[in-house]
Image 1 (cartoon, one colour):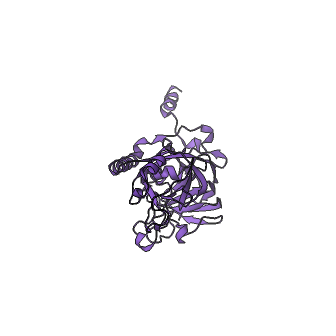
Image 2 (cartoon, one colour):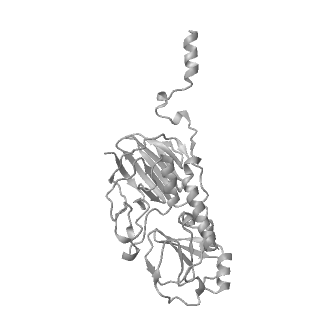
Image 3 (cartoon, one colour):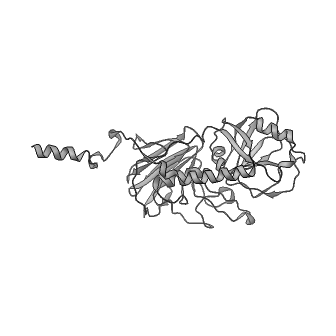
Length: 338
């Protein structure tokens, strides 16, 4: 069996897939990748299922090796990547030869980068998924010395493919739908919420991310003592000092802070990828507009493979250059003349 060998790893590297839906009643949130669009991009680049597990790297990656030649793809927050010193393109697929060292450094934009492997990471499933849910004690962070089994690469397709880079790493506008508790906030507070620009604070992880407002914080008419209800990723809690806290993949399943609304799932990658200091605005949309946006996003994910292109490679960076066939017709013509 092919193995991914970890020589060193950053402080936030974990195995992630699409998580464990269906366990809210038992106190377990879905979990899974913080940037689900990055999972779809990796699947498109390798022509495999987006449900296969990959490595999620928060802030920085590490140094890795494979025991057999393996197809890989790099998506999510762009990070400095190289193989044996030769740079690799991001949002692209590559062939990683056995024994070569893949080095992934710090993110140049965004937060969460992803290393996908042909066949996916085949660690033991727990409750139907391979994702590490750190808040619930399922799985653990990846550390130096770990060896992760890989599944069979049934596709075995080409590499050297790339996708256009998305703009979700620079903050921007995030769409929000009203929820059951939105009415606790007066109209003027909701209008001010939309008009305010927020800065992604240093405080944030896979459970949630804080955003500091330019100006005063926000308050609900009900105060902070509201009925604890089911909460899901994307819900925006207004904390005691009036700052919004957007709940992420590993959020708790119930909470008592008032919620002013909920970020559309298709816009959550923009929240997850906002680096500390990134600027962001929230914009309310209707339920119908939210449904339409989700359908459009699903269609876009399904159409990712149609956007694949081939990398333009520098011959100096191709290790097995002599195995490629170049303009064979010209070679044949030369043979005939001689």
